[in-house]
Image (cartoon, rainbow, N blue to C red; front, side, top):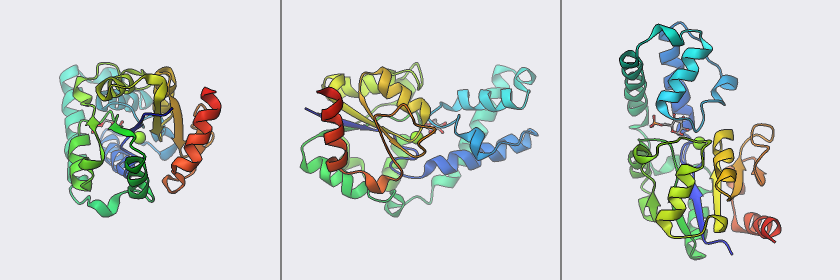
Length: 222
Ligand code: G6P
Ligand code: MG
């Protein structure tokens, strides 16, 4: 029986994935590196500093910066990002998310946020959905980022449930890998090709209902 649902935040609850992309694109351009949406798929779910290193490597500039300089660049991106998200309101919940959260609460399932973002608490605050989540894993306390399962395992531990009773919802390939490595059922939101390792793939958050997910979960755990 399913006991808990662990949600990714950026690109699942709200479209902050877009702001992360725009902020990285601006920073990269200042460094003479052009990134596009195809490249950006590799950044989804990936920590701030790892994202920066992927961008620098992509532009063949990884060796050009010291650790301190990279930290300064990552900070700069975060300042851009924080400015972009100040206008987030409850209206920015992705389609169907509010209804799904209500449904999950009604069904007495536990809920958690498993986001690599150190801005997760702030974004949840702007969206005013804190009450829907029993826990938010603190990204600052996670050592190994997605695709490592650590953040999902921590989420389940904090909720006090077995890993195999958890469903994880993700829009990123690295996130789907993390959920699967944690021994959980993975719901992918987005592209069939990017998220092919998910147990089920939905093209939009609008399709998130327990009616679609639970039968699929039962099939794989039977
Ligand atoms: C999420 C996003 C990534 C982002 C990471 C860290 O996983 O999908 O795009 O880089 O969080 O976010 P932060 O807000 O801590 O820079
Ligand atoms: Mg995401």
